[in-house]
Length: 358
Image (cartoon, helix red, strand yellow):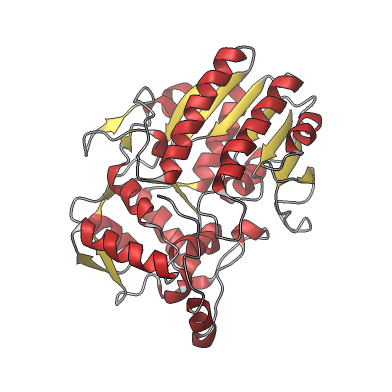
């Protein structure tokens, strides 16, 4: 097949290049290009540097996707810095440009990365199926963005029934190679990445926290199966296990400090406002209120089963943070190992380092 992949240098995009192998004509689209002499970015992959949210992007995309058998849309600004393009430009305008290009070119199959974050709240320990309403979590910009994406896809399918649309709804997608990306999203200058996993590191977690994760390689395999089967519809993706606060602390390797969620949220907001930490409290709201998901459809419709369990997946990310793992693309660059002086200089910058998630 001829496959165009947006966000091809990110966590899932990089894994998908490896999962697809050499039997396809693949074009990778990214705002910042990778090192094309390194695996898996070399070989049969052609590259196009393009910011999907720019005004001229729609025309370029229309030319790029002509003749494609499938387009896989992975590009999304998850937790951009204050110096990156605005989230709305990348996510809303960028997706709109791509959908217009797909329709104009008559691409027969579109695979879009949505998220479990698109779902509205559910009973705390219940697992929801793909028909659960995509109402989002009001206090999380990421969740509202993914819910809006789902509604946009509904309108697109109604207007273009000739395009087969598949929607991935994974939970948190983790990989050793994504350690640098997660360090930049979560830790900032206050917490060096290599101290994660140290038993002395306190982990403030609220009592009824629960979480699901999924390995990046398992998500990439799901995309490959979707492409092979020309699958249409939505599919939840997660490892089988649900982790509570104690299990999360054990997997992360730190020392759990039980604390009420409002206290943690207030501290996180203060840290984000000052630039001490990049993590906006909207992510805590999402972690608390996003529903757990049932993965039966992935098994029955695609024959997909997660190869990695939740504990080993988290452990792999921790190992990557401690060792400074990364990839040969800007999104997956390894965590920085700044000294104390460099970290203090970073803290001297006034204001949030990352865009608001409120």
